[in-house]
Structures are given as structure tokens and as C-alpha cells.
Length: 224
Image (cartoon, rainbow, N blue to C red; front, side, top):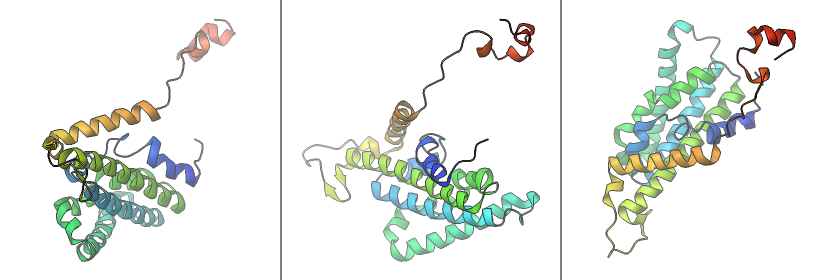
């Protein structure tokens, strides 16, 4: 398999394998915290930090950590960085900490973070693992930011505290609730699939396009 450059690894997490809109990971925090763009950015940056740091440490220690205890070891490493993030947010952005609530410490068991540790960081070099963490973190942040923006504007009529929709027009409160979150989530997934998914390969006729060509007597004889 062809090795990807660090830039390709970085862009892969943002576009082709966006953890939220393509791989459909981290759905619970995505739906729960995106009632505002600010919450989405806060959760995204926190996850970005944890992803990058945990990928770095796990890739650094991949030859030291035994396969028998790798999952518990990964969780301990991730939990350490989550604790650091939570303390920093509590100190410098208490409002965001209050808004994110229990979903901030639950980054420890977020399938995006643990999945990248198991599937990528434990099998690749440090530089590529760091780029993977940054790319996945940026992709996650962008997805949450887009969802938060749409839900906040339609659900409250305001954006970052600035009133955009006249108060005489009642906002659509359903977008602040779970049904509105699912609706926006589905629309964004559909848009990403529409505009970024690779076109399916055209079917080839004859023996060259047949999955059983190698076992076919005619194919081995050069016929069809």
C-alpha cells in the first residue's frame, strides 16, 4: 500500500475521512453540544488537543506498550490529556466548561480519539500520527462549528450574541432540540457525500472486468 505524505494524512482527516460527516463517529457529543457555534468550537478544540497529544505519546510508546494492555494504556494516556484540557477550560473559559458539561470529560471514551489511537497512532510514525490527530481534530471542529452555526441561527435568531433575525420573527426552537440536531446532521452528511465523494468506477466489460477472470480457463488461455 502506498505511503501517504504528512500533508495527505492531514487533509485526509479534514475532507475524505472527516470523523463526523464521513466516518460518522462521535455522534453523541456532536448532537449534544452543537446548540451554539461557541460550544462546537470549544468541544472541537478540546478534542483536537487531546487527539494530537495522545497520538504523539501513543506513537512514541508503541513499541513499549504490550498488546495485552494496549487499550487500558491508551485510555490512561487519553484521560491524562483530557484532565489537562478540562482544568484549563475551567480556569480560562468557565462558561464553556459549564455548557459542555459531562461531554468534556467523556472525550476520554470518544470513539474518534480511541479509534485513531488504535488504528493509526499505534501503527505509524510520530510525525504522521501527529498530522493525523491534527487533521481529524480540525475536521471534527469544522463539523461541530457548521452544525452549531446553523442550529444557533435558526434556533435562537442570534449568532455569538448578535441578533441576526428580527425579534418580531419567532425562531424555530426545534433546532435547539434533538430532532433539529438530527435534521442538520443528516443534511450536512448528505452535502458532504454529494460534493466530496469519489465517483464510482465504471464497469469494465469482458474478462478484464470479471472478478473470476483469474480462475477462468478462457482468461488463462488469453481468450474471452
